[in-house]
Image (tube, rainbow, N blue to C red):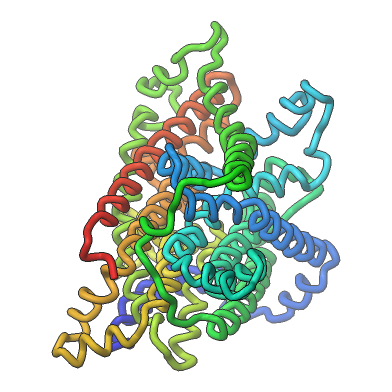
Length: 545
Protein backbone atom coordinates (compact mmCIF):
# COMPACT_ATOMS: atom_id res chain seq x y z
CA UNK A 1 0.00 0.00 0.00
CA UNK A 2 2.78 2.40 0.96
CA UNK A 3 4.72 1.76 -2.24
CA UNK A 4 1.56 2.29 -4.29
CA UNK A 5 1.04 5.69 -2.66
CA UNK A 6 4.65 6.63 -3.44
CA UNK A 7 4.40 5.74 -7.15
CA UNK A 8 3.08 9.15 -8.24
CA UNK A 9 5.50 11.24 -6.08
CA UNK A 10 8.47 9.15 -7.23
CA UNK A 11 7.55 9.55 -10.90
CA UNK A 12 6.94 13.30 -10.48
CA UNK A 13 10.24 13.79 -8.67
CA UNK A 14 12.22 11.73 -11.20
CA UNK A 15 10.80 13.33 -14.35
CA UNK A 16 10.49 16.97 -13.31
CA UNK A 17 13.40 17.35 -10.91
CA UNK A 18 16.09 14.66 -11.07
CA UNK A 19 16.10 14.42 -14.88
CA UNK A 20 16.37 18.20 -15.59
CA UNK A 21 19.06 18.72 -12.93
CA UNK A 22 21.05 15.74 -14.20
CA UNK A 23 20.78 17.14 -17.73
CA UNK A 24 22.25 20.54 -16.80
CA UNK A 25 25.06 18.98 -14.71
CA UNK A 26 25.89 16.62 -17.56
CA UNK A 27 25.99 19.52 -20.01
CA UNK A 28 28.54 21.29 -17.80
CA UNK A 29 30.86 18.41 -16.86
CA UNK A 30 30.94 16.44 -20.12
CA UNK A 31 33.17 17.57 -22.95
CA UNK A 32 33.09 15.66 -26.24
CA UNK A 33 31.21 12.85 -24.52
CA UNK A 34 33.79 12.45 -21.74
CA UNK A 35 33.37 13.38 -18.08
CA UNK A 36 35.82 15.87 -16.55
CA UNK A 37 36.19 14.79 -12.86
CA UNK A 38 39.24 17.01 -12.38
CA UNK A 39 37.00 20.04 -12.58
CA UNK A 40 35.33 19.02 -9.31
CA UNK A 41 38.52 19.27 -7.25
CA UNK A 42 39.67 22.40 -9.06
CA UNK A 43 36.52 24.35 -8.22
CA UNK A 44 35.92 22.86 -4.76
CA UNK A 45 39.38 23.89 -3.51
CA UNK A 46 39.29 27.41 -4.91
CA UNK A 47 39.62 29.93 -2.00
CA UNK A 48 36.94 32.16 -3.49
CA UNK A 49 34.49 29.27 -3.67
CA UNK A 50 35.29 28.21 -0.10
CA UNK A 51 34.53 31.75 1.06
CA UNK A 52 31.19 31.67 -0.76
CA UNK A 53 30.36 28.31 0.84
CA UNK A 54 31.23 29.59 4.32
CA UNK A 55 29.14 32.75 3.95
CA UNK A 56 26.22 30.73 2.53
CA UNK A 57 26.16 28.40 5.54
CA UNK A 58 26.79 31.15 8.09
CA UNK A 59 24.09 33.54 6.92
CA UNK A 60 21.57 30.68 6.56
CA UNK A 61 22.22 29.50 10.13
CA UNK A 62 22.04 33.05 11.51
CA UNK A 63 18.85 33.79 9.56
CA UNK A 64 17.23 30.57 10.79
CA UNK A 65 18.07 31.24 14.43
CA UNK A 66 16.90 34.86 14.24
CA UNK A 67 13.67 33.86 12.48
CA UNK A 68 12.82 31.26 15.14
CA UNK A 69 13.60 33.75 17.91
CA UNK A 70 11.38 36.46 16.43
CA UNK A 71 8.55 34.29 15.06
CA UNK A 72 7.93 31.74 17.84
CA UNK A 73 6.11 34.27 20.06
CA UNK A 74 3.91 35.09 17.06
CA UNK A 75 3.22 31.39 16.50
CA UNK A 76 2.15 31.03 20.13
CA UNK A 77 -0.07 34.13 20.10
CA UNK A 78 -1.86 33.18 16.88
CA UNK A 79 -2.29 29.59 18.08
CA UNK A 80 -3.44 30.19 21.67
CA UNK A 81 -4.96 33.68 21.80
CA UNK A 82 -8.37 34.65 20.44
CA UNK A 83 -8.64 38.37 19.68
CA UNK A 84 -10.34 40.62 17.09
CA UNK A 85 -8.53 40.58 13.74
CA UNK A 86 -6.72 37.32 14.47
CA UNK A 87 -7.60 35.71 11.14
CA UNK A 88 -6.74 38.86 9.20
CA UNK A 89 -3.38 38.86 10.95
CA UNK A 90 -2.74 35.29 9.78
CA UNK A 91 -3.14 36.44 6.19
CA UNK A 92 -1.00 39.55 6.72
CA UNK A 93 2.01 37.61 8.04
CA UNK A 94 1.88 35.26 5.03
CA UNK A 95 1.79 37.98 2.35
CA UNK A 96 5.57 38.74 2.49
CA UNK A 97 6.31 35.11 1.71
CA UNK A 98 5.05 35.42 -1.90
CA UNK A 99 6.71 38.69 -2.87
CA UNK A 100 9.48 38.57 -5.50
CA UNK A 101 12.82 38.70 -3.72
CA UNK A 102 14.17 41.55 -5.85
CA UNK A 103 11.22 43.74 -4.85
CA UNK A 104 11.62 43.01 -1.14
CA UNK A 105 15.36 43.62 -1.39
CA UNK A 106 14.69 47.02 -2.94
CA UNK A 107 12.14 47.85 -0.21
CA UNK A 108 14.60 46.99 2.57
CA UNK A 109 17.30 48.99 0.83
CA UNK A 110 14.94 51.98 0.81
CA UNK A 111 14.35 51.49 4.52
CA UNK A 112 17.85 50.64 5.71
CA UNK A 113 20.24 51.94 3.04
CA UNK A 114 21.61 55.33 2.00
CA UNK A 115 18.77 57.86 2.02
CA UNK A 116 16.38 55.33 3.55
CA UNK A 117 13.90 55.92 6.34
CA UNK A 118 16.36 55.14 9.15
CA UNK A 119 19.06 57.25 7.51
CA UNK A 120 16.73 60.25 7.18
CA UNK A 121 15.30 59.98 10.69
CA UNK A 122 18.30 58.99 12.81
CA UNK A 123 21.28 58.80 10.43
CA UNK A 124 21.45 55.02 10.86
CA UNK A 125 22.33 52.68 7.98
CA UNK A 126 22.25 48.90 8.15
CA UNK A 127 23.25 48.06 4.58
CA UNK A 128 26.98 48.18 5.33
CA UNK A 129 26.89 44.74 6.97
CA UNK A 130 24.73 41.65 6.92
CA UNK A 131 21.93 42.96 9.15
CA UNK A 132 19.82 44.09 6.20
CA UNK A 133 20.12 40.60 4.69
CA UNK A 134 19.20 38.87 7.96
CA UNK A 135 16.20 41.13 8.58
CA UNK A 136 14.95 40.61 5.02
CA UNK A 137 15.20 36.85 5.53
CA UNK A 138 13.19 37.11 8.75
CA UNK A 139 10.63 39.16 6.80
CA UNK A 140 10.26 36.35 4.27
CA UNK A 141 10.23 33.40 6.61
CA UNK A 142 8.22 34.68 9.58
CA UNK A 143 5.13 33.05 8.10
CA UNK A 144 6.87 29.67 7.76
CA UNK A 145 7.34 29.41 11.53
CA UNK A 146 3.94 30.91 12.40
CA UNK A 147 1.98 28.63 10.08
CA UNK A 148 4.00 25.41 10.48
CA UNK A 149 4.62 25.52 14.25
CA UNK A 150 1.44 27.42 15.08
CA UNK A 151 -0.70 24.96 13.12
CA UNK A 152 0.36 22.08 15.38
CA UNK A 153 0.55 24.23 18.53
CA UNK A 154 -3.10 25.22 18.14
CA UNK A 155 -4.14 21.53 18.27
CA UNK A 156 -2.06 20.45 21.27
CA UNK A 157 -4.18 19.77 24.33
CA UNK A 158 -3.30 22.48 26.91
CA UNK A 159 -4.63 20.21 29.66
CA UNK A 160 -1.38 18.22 29.56
CA UNK A 161 0.72 21.27 30.37
CA UNK A 162 -1.79 22.34 33.02
CA UNK A 163 -1.53 18.88 34.61
CA UNK A 164 2.25 19.23 34.81
CA UNK A 165 1.87 22.58 36.58
CA UNK A 166 -0.61 21.09 39.04
CA UNK A 167 2.05 18.48 39.88
CA UNK A 168 4.47 21.24 40.86
CA UNK A 169 6.27 22.15 37.64
CA UNK A 170 6.82 25.84 36.95
CA UNK A 171 5.44 27.50 33.82
CA UNK A 172 8.72 27.24 31.90
CA UNK A 173 9.48 23.73 33.15
CA UNK A 174 6.03 22.51 32.10
CA UNK A 175 6.46 24.04 28.66
CA UNK A 176 9.96 22.58 28.28
CA UNK A 177 9.01 19.06 29.36
CA UNK A 178 5.52 18.75 27.82
CA UNK A 179 4.90 21.22 24.99
CA UNK A 180 8.38 21.56 23.53
CA UNK A 181 8.87 17.82 22.86
CA UNK A 182 5.45 17.71 21.19
CA UNK A 183 6.36 20.69 19.01
CA UNK A 184 9.80 19.30 18.10
CA UNK A 185 8.76 17.80 14.71
CA UNK A 186 7.06 21.03 13.62
CA UNK A 187 9.97 23.11 14.90
CA UNK A 188 12.41 20.93 12.99
CA UNK A 189 10.31 21.19 9.84
CA UNK A 190 10.07 24.98 10.10
CA UNK A 191 13.79 25.37 10.81
CA UNK A 192 14.61 23.13 7.88
CA UNK A 193 12.45 25.13 5.45
CA UNK A 194 13.83 28.46 6.67
CA UNK A 195 17.41 27.20 6.38
CA UNK A 196 16.85 25.89 2.87
CA UNK A 197 15.27 29.13 1.69
CA UNK A 198 18.06 31.25 3.14
CA UNK A 199 20.73 28.80 2.02
CA UNK A 200 19.59 29.31 -1.57
CA UNK A 201 18.87 33.04 -1.17
CA UNK A 202 19.31 34.94 -4.43
CA UNK A 203 17.32 38.18 -4.91
CA UNK A 204 17.89 39.50 -1.39
CA UNK A 205 21.65 38.89 -1.61
CA UNK A 206 21.84 40.47 -5.07
CA UNK A 207 20.17 43.69 -3.94
CA UNK A 208 21.40 44.02 -0.36
CA UNK A 209 24.69 42.12 -0.45
CA UNK A 210 26.34 43.82 -3.39
CA UNK A 211 29.76 42.55 -4.49
CA UNK A 212 30.87 41.80 -0.91
CA UNK A 213 28.47 38.96 -0.17
CA UNK A 214 27.51 36.07 -2.42
CA UNK A 215 25.72 32.78 -1.74
CA UNK A 216 26.13 29.65 -3.82
CA UNK A 217 22.90 30.57 -5.63
CA UNK A 218 24.27 34.01 -6.59
CA UNK A 219 27.57 32.50 -7.70
CA UNK A 220 25.81 29.87 -9.83
CA UNK A 221 23.84 32.63 -11.54
CA UNK A 222 26.98 34.68 -12.11
CA UNK A 223 28.88 31.74 -13.59
CA UNK A 224 25.92 30.75 -15.78
CA UNK A 225 24.43 34.01 -17.01
CA UNK A 226 27.41 36.34 -16.62
CA UNK A 227 30.49 34.27 -17.46
CA UNK A 228 28.83 31.40 -19.39
CA UNK A 229 31.01 28.99 -17.38
CA UNK A 230 28.71 25.95 -17.22
CA UNK A 231 31.39 23.58 -15.80
CA UNK A 232 31.95 25.79 -12.73
CA UNK A 233 28.21 26.31 -12.34
CA UNK A 234 27.69 22.54 -12.50
CA UNK A 235 30.27 21.91 -9.75
CA UNK A 236 28.71 24.59 -7.55
CA UNK A 237 25.32 22.97 -8.10
CA UNK A 238 26.71 19.63 -6.95
CA UNK A 239 28.26 21.27 -3.86
CA UNK A 240 24.94 22.85 -3.00
CA UNK A 241 23.21 19.55 -3.63
CA UNK A 242 25.60 17.66 -1.34
CA UNK A 243 25.20 20.19 1.48
CA UNK A 244 21.39 20.10 1.27
CA UNK A 245 21.33 16.28 1.09
CA UNK A 246 23.50 16.04 4.20
CA UNK A 247 21.27 18.46 6.08
CA UNK A 248 18.14 16.54 5.09
CA UNK A 249 19.69 13.26 6.21
CA UNK A 250 20.49 14.68 9.66
CA UNK A 251 17.01 16.20 9.88
CA UNK A 252 15.29 12.92 8.98
CA UNK A 253 17.33 11.05 11.61
CA UNK A 254 16.55 13.52 14.41
CA UNK A 255 12.86 13.75 13.55
CA UNK A 256 12.42 9.97 13.60
CA UNK A 257 13.76 9.93 17.16
CA UNK A 258 11.25 12.51 18.38
CA UNK A 259 7.98 11.99 16.51
CA UNK A 260 5.15 10.00 18.02
CA UNK A 261 1.41 10.00 18.59
CA UNK A 262 0.03 13.15 20.18
CA UNK A 263 -3.27 14.07 21.78
CA UNK A 264 -4.67 16.55 19.25
CA UNK A 265 -7.82 18.55 19.91
CA UNK A 266 -9.96 20.99 17.97
CA UNK A 267 -8.09 24.29 17.69
CA UNK A 268 -11.24 26.17 18.72
CA UNK A 269 -10.92 24.66 22.20
CA UNK A 270 -7.36 25.90 22.75
CA UNK A 271 -7.65 29.58 21.75
CA UNK A 272 -8.69 31.93 24.58
CA UNK A 273 -8.90 35.65 25.14
CA UNK A 274 -5.68 37.09 26.66
CA UNK A 275 -5.90 37.38 30.44
CA UNK A 276 -3.80 39.54 32.67
CA UNK A 277 -1.24 42.24 31.87
CA UNK A 278 1.45 39.70 30.94
CA UNK A 279 -0.57 38.09 28.15
CA UNK A 280 -1.79 41.44 26.84
CA UNK A 281 1.81 42.70 26.85
CA UNK A 282 2.91 39.63 24.87
CA UNK A 283 0.13 40.20 22.33
CA UNK A 284 1.11 43.87 22.05
CA UNK A 285 4.79 43.07 21.51
CA UNK A 286 3.96 40.55 18.77
CA UNK A 287 1.73 43.10 17.03
CA UNK A 288 4.54 45.69 17.26
CA UNK A 289 7.03 43.27 15.69
CA UNK A 290 4.61 42.48 12.86
CA UNK A 291 3.97 46.18 12.17
CA UNK A 292 7.66 47.17 12.22
CA UNK A 293 9.15 44.15 10.47
CA UNK A 294 6.40 43.02 8.09
CA UNK A 295 3.95 45.86 7.49
CA UNK A 296 6.44 48.72 7.08
CA UNK A 297 8.25 47.27 4.01
CA UNK A 298 4.88 46.50 2.44
CA UNK A 299 3.75 50.06 3.12
CA UNK A 300 6.88 51.32 1.34
CA UNK A 301 5.91 49.34 -1.77
CA UNK A 302 2.37 50.70 -1.74
CA UNK A 303 3.59 54.27 -1.30
CA UNK A 304 6.03 53.97 -4.17
CA UNK A 305 3.35 52.52 -6.43
CA UNK A 306 1.33 55.71 -5.85
CA UNK A 307 4.22 58.23 -6.07
CA UNK A 308 4.20 59.69 -9.58
CA UNK A 309 5.91 62.76 -11.06
CA UNK A 310 2.66 64.70 -10.62
CA UNK A 311 2.15 63.62 -7.03
CA UNK A 312 0.45 60.61 -5.53
CA UNK A 313 -2.13 58.96 -7.77
CA UNK A 314 -3.07 55.90 -9.80
CA UNK A 315 -1.05 56.74 -12.91
CA UNK A 316 1.17 53.65 -12.71
CA UNK A 317 -1.87 51.38 -12.26
CA UNK A 318 -3.58 52.86 -15.32
CA UNK A 319 -0.38 52.29 -17.32
CA UNK A 320 -0.64 48.56 -16.59
CA UNK A 321 -3.77 48.32 -18.74
CA UNK A 322 -2.09 49.81 -21.82
CA UNK A 323 0.07 48.08 -24.42
CA UNK A 324 2.16 50.34 -26.64
CA UNK A 325 4.78 49.74 -29.30
CA UNK A 326 7.57 50.20 -26.75
CA UNK A 327 5.93 47.97 -24.16
CA UNK A 328 7.99 45.42 -22.25
CA UNK A 329 5.40 42.71 -22.96
CA UNK A 330 3.36 41.37 -25.86
CA UNK A 331 0.16 41.89 -23.83
CA UNK A 332 -1.04 44.51 -21.33
CA UNK A 333 0.92 43.90 -18.09
CA UNK A 334 -2.27 43.60 -16.04
CA UNK A 335 -2.90 40.21 -17.69
CA UNK A 336 -0.08 38.84 -15.56
CA UNK A 337 -2.54 38.80 -12.63
CA UNK A 338 -4.86 36.30 -14.34
CA UNK A 339 -1.91 34.24 -15.59
CA UNK A 340 -0.44 33.96 -12.09
CA UNK A 341 -3.76 32.93 -10.55
CA UNK A 342 -4.35 30.25 -13.19
CA UNK A 343 -0.83 28.85 -12.95
CA UNK A 344 -0.89 28.91 -9.13
CA UNK A 345 -4.25 27.08 -9.01
CA UNK A 346 -2.95 24.25 -11.20
CA UNK A 347 0.36 24.13 -9.32
CA UNK A 348 -1.49 23.92 -5.98
CA UNK A 349 -3.61 21.02 -7.21
CA UNK A 350 -0.52 19.15 -8.42
CA UNK A 351 1.34 19.86 -5.17
CA UNK A 352 -1.57 18.67 -3.02
CA UNK A 353 -1.92 15.41 -4.96
CA UNK A 354 1.80 14.63 -5.07
CA UNK A 355 2.61 15.92 -1.59
CA UNK A 356 -0.52 14.43 -0.01
CA UNK A 357 0.24 10.95 -1.37
CA UNK A 358 3.85 11.24 -0.23
CA UNK A 359 2.87 12.41 3.28
CA UNK A 360 0.31 9.59 3.62
CA UNK A 361 2.95 7.02 2.69
CA UNK A 362 5.68 8.52 4.86
CA UNK A 363 3.47 8.87 7.94
CA UNK A 364 3.89 5.19 8.78
CA UNK A 365 6.97 3.29 9.81
CA UNK A 366 9.05 2.47 6.76
CA UNK A 367 12.38 1.13 5.61
CA UNK A 368 15.43 3.13 4.65
CA UNK A 369 14.36 3.47 1.01
CA UNK A 370 11.09 5.19 1.89
CA UNK A 371 12.74 7.34 4.58
CA UNK A 372 15.37 8.39 2.04
CA UNK A 373 12.65 9.55 -0.33
CA UNK A 374 11.30 11.75 2.48
CA UNK A 375 14.58 13.66 2.39
CA UNK A 376 14.72 13.71 -1.42
CA UNK A 377 11.35 15.46 -1.57
CA UNK A 378 12.94 18.48 0.14
CA UNK A 379 15.77 18.81 -2.38
CA UNK A 380 13.87 21.21 -4.71
CA UNK A 381 13.96 23.80 -1.90
CA UNK A 382 17.74 23.52 -1.71
CA UNK A 383 18.51 23.37 -5.41
CA UNK A 384 19.41 26.38 -7.52
CA UNK A 385 16.33 27.73 -9.29
CA UNK A 386 18.66 28.74 -12.12
CA UNK A 387 19.69 25.10 -12.51
CA UNK A 388 16.09 23.88 -12.48
CA UNK A 389 14.99 26.50 -15.01
CA UNK A 390 17.79 25.75 -17.46
CA UNK A 391 17.28 22.04 -16.86
CA UNK A 392 13.63 22.26 -17.90
CA UNK A 393 14.63 23.91 -21.17
CA UNK A 394 17.37 21.38 -21.90
CA UNK A 395 15.71 18.16 -20.75
CA UNK A 396 12.04 18.62 -21.64
CA UNK A 397 12.49 19.41 -25.33
CA UNK A 398 12.08 15.99 -26.99
CA UNK A 399 9.13 13.58 -27.32
CA UNK A 400 7.49 12.19 -25.27
CA UNK A 401 8.41 15.05 -22.89
CA UNK A 402 8.51 17.97 -25.33
CA UNK A 403 6.82 20.48 -23.04
CA UNK A 404 8.69 23.70 -23.82
CA UNK A 405 5.75 25.11 -25.79
CA UNK A 406 3.12 23.87 -23.33
CA UNK A 407 1.50 26.06 -20.66
CA UNK A 408 1.71 23.19 -18.14
CA UNK A 409 5.48 23.63 -17.81
CA UNK A 410 5.11 26.70 -15.58
CA UNK A 411 2.76 25.15 -12.96
CA UNK A 412 4.89 21.98 -12.94
CA UNK A 413 7.96 24.05 -12.06
CA UNK A 414 5.99 25.93 -9.40
CA UNK A 415 4.61 22.68 -7.95
CA UNK A 416 8.18 21.46 -7.38
CA UNK A 417 8.52 24.15 -4.72
CA UNK A 418 5.01 23.59 -3.35
CA UNK A 419 5.30 19.82 -2.78
CA UNK A 420 7.86 20.07 0.07
CA UNK A 421 5.59 22.54 1.89
CA UNK A 422 2.63 20.19 1.58
CA UNK A 423 4.68 17.25 2.87
CA UNK A 424 6.26 19.15 5.77
CA UNK A 425 2.91 20.65 6.81
CA UNK A 426 0.92 17.40 6.70
CA UNK A 427 3.55 14.95 7.92
CA UNK A 428 3.85 16.04 11.60
CA UNK A 429 0.05 15.97 11.98
CA UNK A 430 -0.35 12.62 10.19
CA UNK A 431 2.38 11.05 12.30
CA UNK A 432 0.70 12.40 15.44
CA UNK A 433 -2.53 10.48 14.68
CA UNK A 434 -2.88 7.53 17.05
CA UNK A 435 -2.45 4.38 14.87
CA UNK A 436 -4.91 2.53 17.11
CA UNK A 437 -7.70 4.58 15.51
CA UNK A 438 -6.77 3.18 12.08
CA UNK A 439 -6.49 -0.32 13.52
CA UNK A 440 -9.94 -0.04 15.08
CA UNK A 441 -11.40 1.08 11.75
CA UNK A 442 -9.76 -1.86 10.02
CA UNK A 443 -11.13 -4.30 12.61
CA UNK A 444 -14.61 -2.92 11.94
CA UNK A 445 -14.18 -3.75 8.25
CA UNK A 446 -13.07 -0.42 6.77
CA UNK A 447 -10.79 -0.55 3.72
CA UNK A 448 -7.48 1.39 3.89
CA UNK A 449 -9.00 4.16 1.76
CA UNK A 450 -12.12 4.43 3.92
CA UNK A 451 -10.05 4.28 7.10
CA UNK A 452 -7.98 7.21 5.82
CA UNK A 453 -11.12 9.12 4.86
CA UNK A 454 -12.88 8.48 8.16
CA UNK A 455 -9.91 8.70 10.56
CA UNK A 456 -7.02 10.69 9.11
CA UNK A 457 -8.84 13.24 6.94
CA UNK A 458 -11.05 14.76 9.69
CA UNK A 459 -7.97 15.21 11.89
CA UNK A 460 -5.69 16.76 9.25
CA UNK A 461 -8.07 18.77 7.09
CA UNK A 462 -7.07 22.00 8.80
CA UNK A 463 -3.43 21.21 8.02
CA UNK A 464 -4.52 20.38 4.46
CA UNK A 465 -5.95 23.87 4.05
CA UNK A 466 -2.75 25.38 5.48
CA UNK A 467 -0.73 23.28 3.02
CA UNK A 468 -2.91 24.48 0.15
CA UNK A 469 -2.35 28.07 1.22
CA UNK A 470 1.41 27.60 1.34
CA UNK A 471 1.48 25.86 -2.05
CA UNK A 472 -0.62 28.60 -3.64
CA UNK A 473 1.48 31.33 -2.04
CA UNK A 474 4.84 29.97 -3.14
CA UNK A 475 3.46 29.37 -6.64
CA UNK A 476 2.34 33.00 -6.88
CA UNK A 477 5.76 34.25 -5.87
CA UNK A 478 8.03 31.70 -7.61
CA UNK A 479 10.50 33.49 -9.85
CA UNK A 480 13.83 31.68 -10.26
CA UNK A 481 12.67 28.84 -12.52
CA UNK A 482 9.59 30.54 -13.98
CA UNK A 483 11.62 33.38 -15.49
CA UNK A 484 13.26 30.92 -17.90
CA UNK A 485 10.12 29.10 -19.05
CA UNK A 486 7.25 31.64 -18.90
CA UNK A 487 6.14 32.62 -22.41
CA UNK A 488 6.31 36.32 -23.43
CA UNK A 489 2.56 36.40 -24.06
CA UNK A 490 1.69 34.85 -20.67
CA UNK A 491 4.01 36.41 -18.05
CA UNK A 492 3.49 35.83 -14.33
CA UNK A 493 3.47 38.64 -11.78
CA UNK A 494 7.03 38.04 -10.43
CA UNK A 495 8.43 37.80 -13.98
CA UNK A 496 6.63 41.00 -14.98
CA UNK A 497 7.97 42.81 -11.90
CA UNK A 498 11.54 41.69 -12.60
CA UNK A 499 11.36 42.78 -16.23
CA UNK A 500 10.06 46.21 -15.25
CA UNK A 501 12.84 46.57 -12.66
CA UNK A 502 15.38 45.61 -15.31
CA UNK A 503 14.45 48.61 -17.46
CA UNK A 504 15.39 52.18 -16.66
CA UNK A 505 12.83 54.92 -16.19
CA UNK A 506 10.38 56.11 -13.58
CA UNK A 507 7.40 54.59 -15.42
CA UNK A 508 8.91 51.09 -15.45
CA UNK A 509 9.86 51.30 -11.77
CA UNK A 510 6.42 52.60 -10.82
CA UNK A 511 4.68 49.83 -12.76
CA UNK A 512 6.89 47.29 -10.98
CA UNK A 513 5.77 48.67 -7.64
CA UNK A 514 2.14 48.68 -8.81
CA UNK A 515 2.33 45.02 -9.87
CA UNK A 516 3.98 44.16 -6.55
CA UNK A 517 1.09 45.81 -4.73
CA UNK A 518 -1.41 43.86 -6.82
CA UNK A 519 0.47 40.67 -5.93
CA UNK A 520 0.16 41.54 -2.25
CA UNK A 521 -3.57 42.22 -2.58
CA UNK A 522 -4.22 39.02 -4.55
CA UNK A 523 -2.29 36.96 -2.00
CA UNK A 524 -4.08 38.58 0.93
CA UNK A 525 -7.49 37.91 -0.67
CA UNK A 526 -6.64 34.26 -1.34
CA UNK A 527 -5.25 33.71 2.15
CA UNK A 528 -8.31 35.31 3.77
CA UNK A 529 -10.53 33.02 1.69
CA UNK A 530 -8.53 29.97 2.79
CA UNK A 531 -8.74 31.13 6.40
CA UNK A 532 -12.54 31.32 6.14
CA UNK A 533 -12.63 27.82 4.64
CA UNK A 534 -10.41 26.55 7.45
CA UNK A 535 -12.72 28.09 10.04
CA UNK A 536 -15.79 26.65 8.31
CA UNK A 537 -14.19 23.22 8.47
CA UNK A 538 -13.60 23.77 12.15
CA UNK A 539 -17.33 24.28 12.78
CA UNK A 540 -18.13 20.80 11.44
CA UNK A 541 -18.61 18.67 14.54
CA UNK A 542 -17.58 15.53 12.69
CA UNK A 543 -14.05 16.81 12.73
CA UNK A 544 -13.81 16.74 16.52
CA UNK A 545 -12.68 13.79 18.56
